Image 1 (cartoon, rainbow, N blue to C red):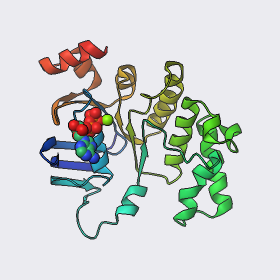
Image 2: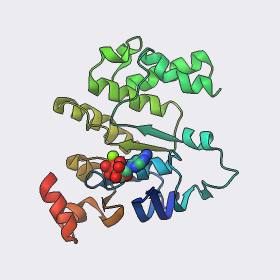
Image 3: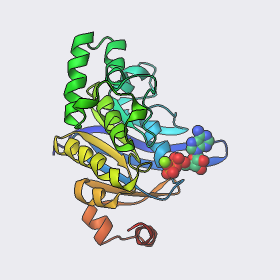
Length: 245
Ligand code: ADP
Ligand code: MG
């Protein structure tokens, strides 16, 4: 792994009214790193991901992407978002468009690719997630696992520098979790930088380079998967793991 930093978060606070959700986070993500974030519901994991993508603005603190502070006026929010692929719990595909159109929309709209190039790229990505035969299907006709694999392929069409996953398997029937995790694992092995919020502890153990345990808007503990799962230092971590493992 290179030591080059892609994302740096400094003393990040986020309040919603009087609700203090993020309370001073310091997090660095290196290029090629797979960072898995775990923690109880309501601890601020989604808010953290959304802040990196500028879907939320920090109350205070800084978010740097390749050394550029995102709140600077010179930051192009839309260009920045193009560099981050985001995958949500609820696949968020466009229901009135075919799978292929879901994948070609952003590259064509932003002028990145021409129609036939976008189509070729989409087909290549669908093959990569094992869905080359679904290009002309509509999302509703697919299983949840297939829809989520389409969502991952769609996020990849813009060649993002990092992929953010927010509980990508939480809405799936258990038998479909594995196919989505397998696609994510392949991406990780190909060197994609990934920040993954998940309750899939097996994935965290096998794929993460680093695990952060977050609770109440703070980092309680971070370390290698071995350290967090086999030798947690904090009582709060042990208590959480005993409930989810
Ligand atoms: P997690 O993803 O760890 O479950 P969230 O980041 O979704 O946690 O939520 C953390 C807290 O922030 C919750 O109390 C939630 O109600 C609050 N929150 C999240 N988004 C908003 C919002 N847009 N407006 C107001 N409160 C919010
Ligand atoms: Mg969440």
